[in-house]
Image 1 (cartoon, rainbow, N blue to C red):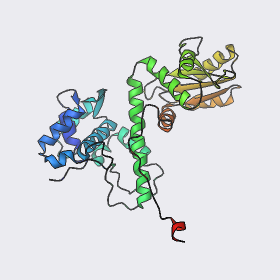
Image 2: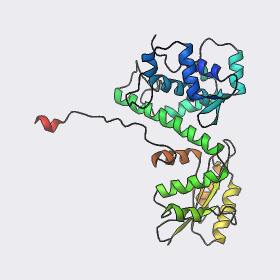
Image 3: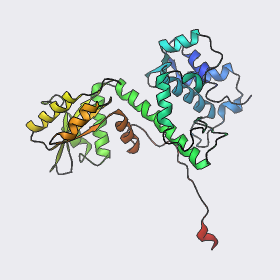
Length: 306
């Protein structure tokens, strides 16, 4: 038999988690046994040579089930079924696919984010092997890239929210250093390790000599627990007490419109970074993620033939 596509693997992955926490590597082997994959199909690699095609598709099935809230990560490499996932199983569906998952608002929002600004919204959304597309290969490649990064961004945010509080602080240190602030990790770590200091969570040197400083407020909140204007005014007061001219307010949730308006009208420069912007910066600066593969897109060299 041929290797099933990732949508065909959604139901087996969900069923595999129905009895409790499972390890993704064990699920890959379990499903391969259930559908009787041949040795050749089990070991067939992606072009990168870093992962098998079948494992890649099982991971994508898991990722999409997570976006729909049917399963949830518990610890590194492990996951379990949610109450919503159990309800789906109890309905005894014959098949799960993207159309089925689209009934859940979280999944619908995820797909809208991942396909935003697509040239043709009818392009097939399969993240591994995109076929029968109406866009050009160049357009399809970029849509697929956006899908992968949207999935990665959500995974990063989920892991940050599940990590211990001091991890968020260390994350901001790593990100700011990667962006060129703070001088060295040691110096930046000492600067930001002052949680609860009169409304300021830390200070980052804007240059290696410490001639200019950025004061930081960090709030690790769950999705929907938005930052209001009161928190911005409190941070402004803290900046005033420190005689600081600029501040950075970072959260894993979002800012209300009133909070953003307040930051815009205050006399001190306060930059607001919400969860979406945070993960965008992490991906851009390779913080908490790494390059798995590189594709070289080549074109005809006209100069060679002249």
